[in-house]
Image (cartoon, rainbow, N blue to C red):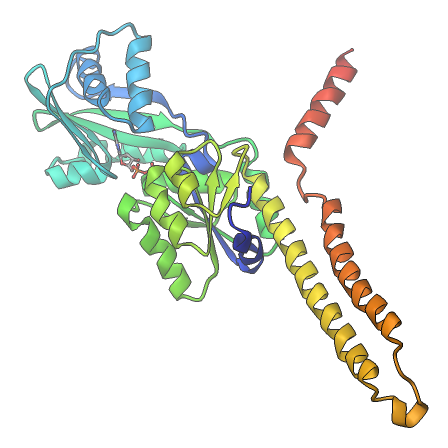
Length: 350
Ligand code: ADP
Ligand code: MG
């Protein structure tokens, strides 16, 4: 959905596509895969961590709370809660101070991670996000969540590369994790550990380097970057704020839509240019003829009736040329193809 006509034109000039990771390239519904308690009772620590996370809206928090509920845990109430965007959270549970978040959050709290560094590295290499929990200022657990790529992501990245576009990933996640996800998706340029407030600055930095940037995102924290980019593309299944800040919305959430939007945009621009060319060329030639430039030489004049006809013909030509866009076939027929394949599978099975 093109929310602004200008975006249809601007997208054709884009040379760099920056993709948000969580919820854009990935499903945005992480699962907790590991919970390693350090020198303490895992059940008790998970109970405290889940209680703290129950106050957070971050998808990671939902994954942890869900995992605790699946294990049949009662989640105790929480009174004091504080979220540090891009870092983690802090809460008081049962009179104990619980802090959960990224490595850089623990560093900021002055908690030493040397003993668990290797473990976290292993998790990140498997495209899992390592998180840490501290209770009363002591490291208590290493947690991992994983958020798999959407089905169409690698194909979309490949198709964007084939269009000659540079593709980069922007995320607040851990560098190691971000790099392994990027490798799975086929992206070579990664901007990781970017704080929520700095996403727009990263886009601005690329623009200052002369790039025409399309930013693709879904979250509240993506809105400033969506507004900053030359073309902001929001995921239709994302937050309202992101959609509001964007110029283009991918209604189905499938990234292959970017390739189709860029293809359509190039076609539209070509139609605009050819319309300009023909409309001008036509008038540049025929107006002087109508004015009589050929009369002194060959006695040629344009009959006013023919001139009126020619005038209309030029408009009809421009409209017809534009209407050819109705025949536009998207380079990747994502959903249609999936439906087609499903039908074929059913037929084969029958
Ligand atoms: P992104 O949306 O790209 O994952 P965020 O800025 O939302 O980026 O989060 C960055 C990192 O901060 C997360 O990967 C995680 O390590 C940490 N974090 C943020 N919120 C929480 C939370 N509620 N619980 C645990 N960790 C969190
Ligand atoms: Mg996101």
